[in-house]
Image 1 (cartoon, protein in one colour):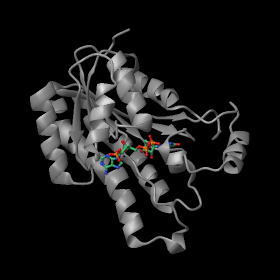
Image 2: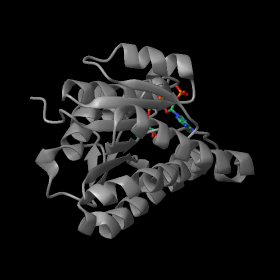
Image 3: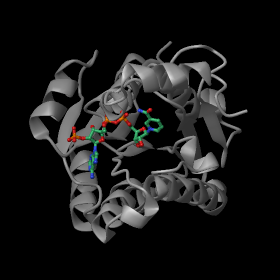
Image 4: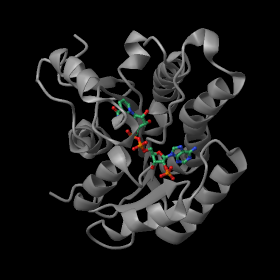
Length: 245
Ligand code: NDP
């Protein structure tokens, strides 16, 4: 079903991992997709792999407020008005809290939380004028539970949940929905560093018995972004194989 035909969707960090799976799911649903990443060649490669036509690759660091305003303007000029935004770009810089450097804190908060704020502010004006739009923020189960060794990352992801609920309340009257997805352990570059011993310990904590695939998250994003979720806003949908129950 091409339920997103005619729509323009922006996916930050759409060049690999979960973001690439989301971009593919949107393209399959008929949307034109603007992929944002820091590495231009990788973003171009991602766009070339998408089904359909009219997609675009864009280089932008979402932590840079001015760059975000420019890229959103550029996307709207090139592809048309943005109706879907997925804030997926994210990084980790793990360490125990007493060893975290200021720079580890700032880099993670700037990319994961401030970046989402920059993007939402830049696309919301157009969505408000058109009285329609859908925003999905990719948080994490650790934003709900906390995680030793990830104070900066968990704080950024918990912050995204507060951002999601506030934006949902603020923009609902303008026909804009804002939801979040909290993935558990998904097999991507971000989790590739796990050795087999850790991976099998994690698997034991997951009732569905396996780590997640990016497509598992993409299916949930496609649902929340699209018309089937028209009466859902301000929610956090956990996609973790039952790990956090
Ligand atoms: P990857 O490391 O595989 O991909 C990250 C993507 O984000 C890349 O496309 C990267 O672009 C982009 N990116 C990172 N920082 C920036 C930035 N400042 N500006 C623009 N783009 C940026 O990550 P995953 O696919 O694993 O994760 C995607 C999201 O899902 C993240 O927010 C992550 O926190 C979240 N998540 C992941 C889980 C997992 O188990 N994998 C679990 C829970 C949540 P480039 O290629 O140019 O570097």
